Image 1 (spheres, rainbow, N blue to C red):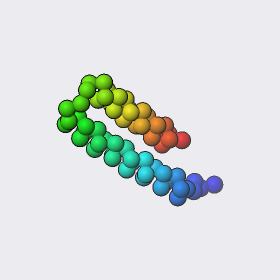
Image 2 (cartoon, rainbow, N blue to C red):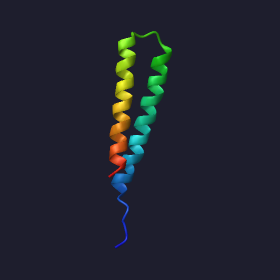
Image 3 (cartoon, one colour):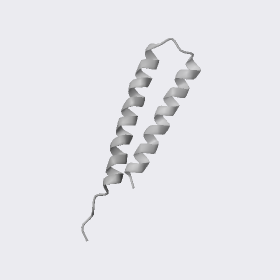
Amino acid sequence: MAKQNNPVADQEIRMGRRVSRQVSVLLTEIEKEEVPDRLLELARELQKALSEKIASRSDR
């Protein structure tokens, strides 16, 4: 049986990429601002967690 593409899953993947890109852009902007080190550390942890979540979804 041939694999069928699921348009909903494809749409979710594209949305995840857009979200990941938006997060990346925002984090880059945050890094340009004077912010406490702890806030920057939390933002980086958030980016890592989001990237891992997106990666785990694409492994399915």
